[in-house]
Image (spheres, rainbow, N blue to C red):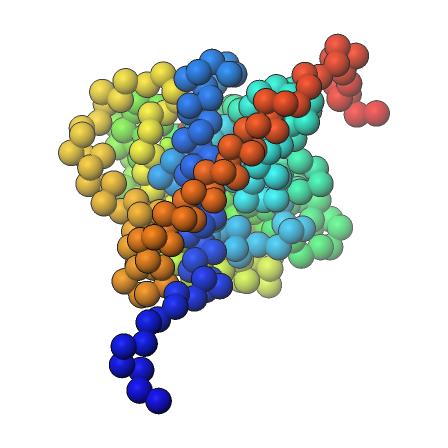
Length: 328
Ligand SMILES: Cc1ncc(C[n+]2csc(CCOP(=O)(O)OP(=O)(O)O)c2C)c(N)n1
Ligand SMILES: [Mg+2]
């Protein structure tokens, strides 16, 4: 039969479509978080992950539920990727009892023992010793899970990170240290604070396996990280991955961003992981402009439902104030 004139129906079950929708969900989630913050629906610190979605989505695809993950304070969407429902993350931002940390953690302290997401930490580099401890447990219990430890580029100049990299390398502990090199620590350009041109080179000091990945492209991330994770499960050794990326918003909500030029931001916007994949879906006939718009509408509705859940949830009862201070 001739295919002439036949209209191709986009394959909505294609894996690239799922990756796109997931990244778009994180993008819209964080945009909504910014709106809620600006409308004073919650206060305190708030750091969004806009621009860094490809890494978050790609890495998770290479893990299994029993693997552990730990991160810094820019971790709303990493927590969701690890399995915490988005509405519980939103409720945590609002300090509600339905939040994943029962409203006691807030933006910087998402946590779920059930999903093996060990935080959300505000001390730069503070997650690295905890990650190494979790990896020690895995070794002690003779399991073959791994620990993903996300850190920012500024964490690579923290002393405790090197102490535990040395331990992890000496004791063969399965920690995948992932440095999200978005090139700024608050308003400071990494080149002003760091002696090496590539952060992965720091692994050489510990004879630790290492590499760098373009973290603006989700397919590249999956291909690269999948190999690392498979190797780590076999070798049971640590690994340092430098993930080159860019954050499109300020460090936190109050950031005039006068430390970088508009031209620089515009250059990186050309690599926007969500937009670039959307264009690819269209060019490969996996989506049309109308389909992209309808997915966007669906996702915005989903995010509004997450927020509504947070809005309608109760605050913690005063009796909770002394709960979870010490282990029962
Ligand atoms: C030990 C410590 N020193 C300083 C700070 C203040 N501080 C908060 S965020 C930040 C920058 C961290 O940048 P980076 O690690 O690159 O992560 P990003 O914000 O880019 O994701 C600093 C210095 C802190 N929280 N902890
Ligand atoms: Mg940074």
